[in-house]
Image 1 (tube, rainbow, N blue to C red):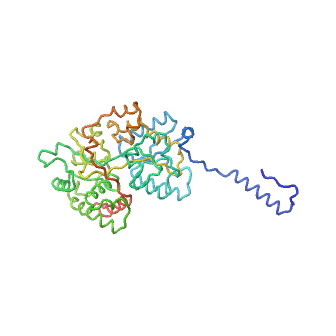
Image 2: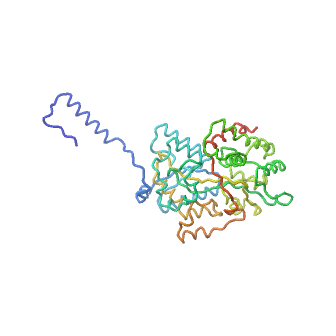
Image 3: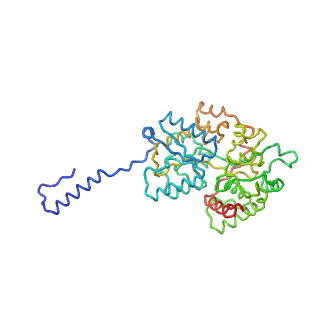
Length: 424
């Protein structure tokens, strides 16, 4: 309370000052107070705040088995925590980044449309660079984060060379894997599927129309470009950091030459490309192509289990290694349900959710958890899982190639679009 001295003079100026102070105090009392962000270190408070919230999770919606898994997550968090999860299906995460950026530009610092986003790579780098993420590191304080294998999996702490800094939470790992129908390889072929770029180029030329890849910027298409680039570049270390345009042109010249050589022999003569991993699976299932690709080593076996692929499908990787990364969930700075999003992210890291995701009858996405950190009961969830006929073991997957800096992804997408997006 503000007190005025009885000895104070009561002239007009003083009365106006008192009136001004009273008005300012009234406005200060009625002005909205920005709520503090939930602190996952106080997990009970987060759970209390999250109850009754609706979390709008913007996530890729191009695969029915993944959509079904997310729906199951929604059922579980509703049952256990009173959180309603709404899956907003998106085709390109870059569009979600653009939406959050537009909200920031419009001054919408609270009540944003996006509560959580499935993200990694250049999209995470863009969100971080533009200050669009929940500011304080939060993922490292999630209760289940302690089970993550961040000691042995550096991809959980660096996203496309960008430090995660606790601004996103891991929930799956990935490694580029090719699959093929073994009925058409082996007999009459030199040595089964082509496991290096020279052999792949020769196979494409000998089998015109039987190979394609997804059009960038779809993630699997861009990953294929990076995989080929890794096999052609002289000094791989150059990919670990940004570069200027002249360096980019010099380093990627062999890539464009290689693509030009195979282009006339692609599916539909390279006039169109696949849309995504789901489209690639459909093309192989319909016998339009003989080799497909995925970022999930268990996807081919999962497709066999679903009846999409015949049981003759098998997997392979390039003999010089294959690109691997992790995928994450992030919370925008202006999310409406931050506590609810944290609860969902923590559940995604639970052994129950991770084991279900790793089940090839459900999804087959590799876990981010450390088996050695699990209890006997938690280990049993993973021990019960079986590996399908098209799933490669750790030794068969070979060396993991680190994702290049996000600069290379953005530049490769732009250059590929300039050359091929018109369908020429």
